[in-house]
Image (cartoon, rainbow, N blue to C red; front, side):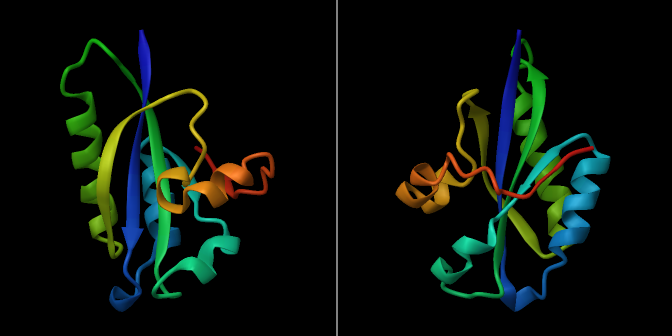
Length: 119
């Protein structure tokens, strides 16, 4: 059986992050990448910051799949000014950015204008 694992990634505006570079490298490593929709930018404490979610499918037989995904994601995004703050299995009905932006993301889940980039 397969599970989807998602890592939530934050980029600090103070570090002059290269979010595009991080997204491209994650895709090269087999991750699906969801970039933060611009409509959420006014909600950030620092408008130069950014968020993304990286997901990958893994076998649920592997007890270390989440830890491994977290290590890979964090290792990649750190080079681009990011940090993977949390990582774990997600449900098929996962709404991107609902953990960060809560009700606003959930209310707008029918609006699929979220920029999605895949391999």
